Amino acid sequence: MGIAVISGFRQKAIVGDGGKIEIIAPDLPRGAKVEVFVLTDAAEQDTTEYLLSTSANRQHLLKAMEDLNDRALYTFVNPDKL
Image (cartoon, rainbow, N blue to C red; front, side):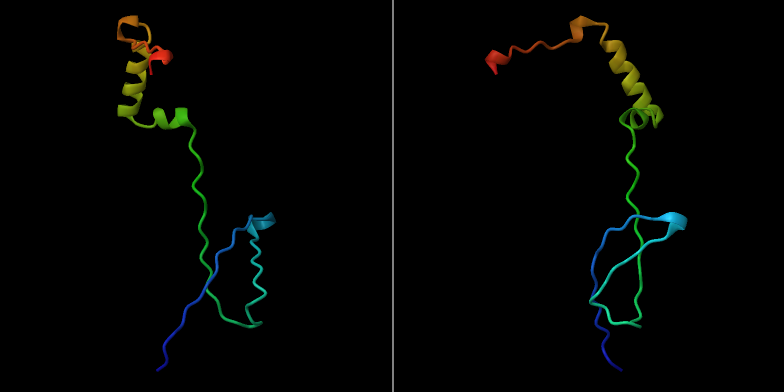
């Protein structure tokens, strides 16, 4: 029984019409058996959507917005003294 040697490469692709994905691998011999893994990029979540995504996040955001009305909570910084 021989030892399997695994080699590979990584390539980005864009899904085309009908879900077609094209992989170009000129170094692979014709008829070679390969296994393909497809990973998708996670969709970027809008910052506001994220901040409102849980009850705790919503409460924190609403409290921060309320705090904007209370200037006593502000911290003023003089950039010349930094």
